[in-house]
Length: 165
Image 1 (cartoon, rainbow, N blue to C red):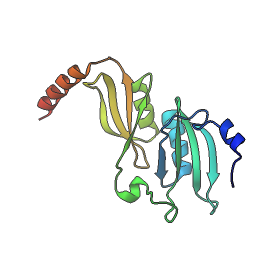
Image 2 (cartoon, rainbow, N blue to C red):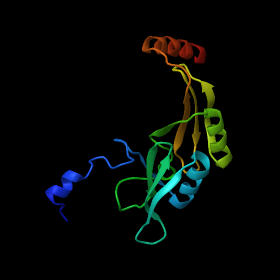
Image 3 (cartoon, rainbow, N blue to C red):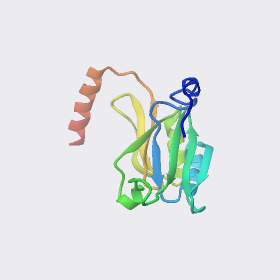
Image 4 (cartoon, rainbow, N blue to C red):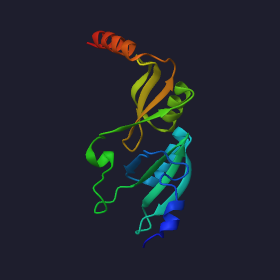
């Protein structure tokens, strides 16, 4: 299928509502993950497409804050992606800036996330902590509290490392 040149010029290269980088998650049981993200992060479901088997989610899109998140079920044989539980961990994390990190963190835990790193006032100026969702993805939850220069971040990081040693 080809698109005419005139039609191609009228289409935005980055669709309305998207940012240049849009994360996509692979999970085991995407239908449950969608419901969890609604409860934990206030996600709004925008789109869901069933897989050819009619059982799994081939592709879904959620709105969380001003960003979109794509996700789908793990489907061996359809791409080289695996869910964290199949891998025995995850190689990445997502970071969600919110107005009130404490309230958002508590909401995620109450929805079923486990605390990976308790909330703290981080040396770079954010209130920050991490949770692991029931599907194995790690989420940093942050509220920006203070603008800190690169030099001050370096100084604070060294002090933090010395205290943690």
